[in-house]
Length: 389
Image (cartoon, rainbow, N blue to C red; front, top):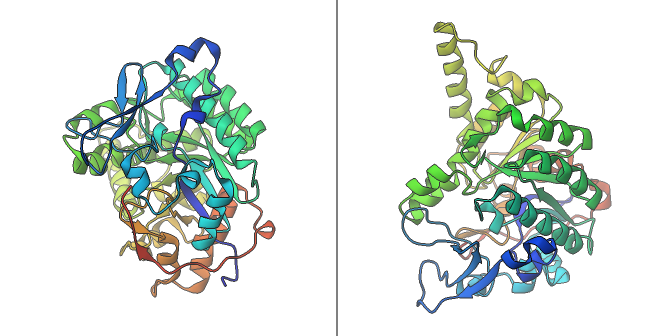
């Protein structure tokens, strides 16, 4: 048995019909509904979709491609190694049992459907997020010590997002979530400052998660491979630019922020690139937005990220960001062809036992404000290969 409780810094729920049960009456006619397709196996067995404002999500083919494990009526969801009750949290004891099998004492849960821009209407998007947050708070309240959650924030409606930060804290959220951009707008735009100010006031950290949030990048991706590598992953780098290099941490130095599910091997390159262009702007006599070299923001202590268990550049990432600011994600039930990244970290030979404890336990506890003493250690399962997202 592990000597410390393992904390999963980023796993997920798969939305179901109940997720949208808290929509306000004025949005009742626009409530997402499930459309089942008869299309053979399709792409990754994606044969169920959410119909929202006349459009189907996800979109597994062509330009703008996306893929999701929700709705769980799809063949994709049924082929996963996790039960439908666990994926949707309809069966909380089953999710806890599956966490036990992975050696996870506590997990912080993020959305799945909301990794896609579901509507062009910012206020309807905000309503969908409110319903999601209320639903997830109810589900996690069945096991509050072990199931933590991040509230989805409607950044495209900043005044509404501020109110949702306040409500999420009252509901018991451990964090808030945004994609790497707010549509086509970068996250250092000053219209978002009230949101950051309220996050600091409520002591809620911000998770910048991979997802299909930028319309231009999404449209450019002409298939699933391009989708995952470009439109899904690259916005996190844009988010890093904005929050660390774009002035947000200068204006809000007490904001805690993590960059999630993009791995960590991009970080050394990105830090060097941002510092290089600070020099270029100085040469052209243009004041850089970031007041300090990028590494100084990392040393300040409020910047975290999650890494994959098999990243060969992980030791270098630890050198750049510091061993106190790296976390790991099991990504349940989105294994993307691999299962139990946490066990992969635990069995690495190039990390000391002390660093492993920080990555798997101390650092996520500090970032999310989780009391480790309230958690019982669990024995981690060995790493294994598993199913697709």
